[in-house]
Length: 340
Image 1 (cartoon, one colour):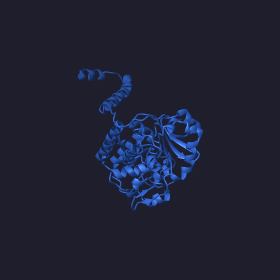
Image 2 (cartoon, helix red, strand yellow):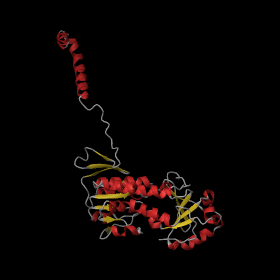
Image 3 (cartoon, rainbow, N blue to C red):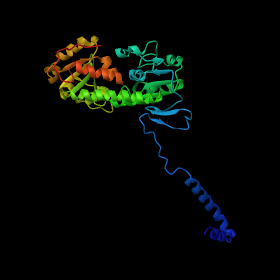
């Protein structure tokens, strides 16, 4: 068949030759295309959000909340700007060279010996971070997206949704950090153990609705079902009656909103300096008429632990504390004292 085609082409006149050239080129292009991979559907589907990319030929490219970051090797000098990240490193038996600090949960005290403070979580010092010459920075979406470019100019920076994320966001964050350190199995085991503890906790939980309030004088910041603590309450077997508002997982409400929600239980995070304001708040006719207050289903927990202990270790301690204060079994409590 091929011989016949060649013979026919030889006898074609000069007029047709000008059409054969473009057709030949098309055939060549088609043949080259057919030599490539038939279906290139490779995508980053693992929990580490790691991808291969030509812009990171000698390292690993990680997707995160602010884009993609190339990590050349296992980091040796890491700066963390949120407590959940400090928790992650502790789980992995790693230690940062720098961390942001303000009213840190007590359970993390032993993880920062001889570690440099680089300012507060809300306002970390770019200069102090740069002085440490880190090879990786782990930052928070809510607090640090605005300085991402500055941080990235110092060292590769990954951004996770810690402050305004939910429980699953924290676990995904640990998985990616573990993958960077090449300690996936350590993270998987820690998360598995925590999930087993949550499941056991749920078996002992009496289902009811719980409103979570971070109390400050004149201000009530509630945690919706999409926040870390709000979603954790759900995993415990409780119901969170507060929905996210305009994409915000935590937001302020007024006293009248308490009456509209009228939950079965109230969970307060407040510090001792707010005790006097809390006492007045509970005597407010609107608040004292709530069924949670009437039935003594009002619980006080450590603000430092419950609002900042978002890592595996912190959550485990929170589960223990929820049982201790009577929240899980809805045990009436007349202890109305703010805890640091």
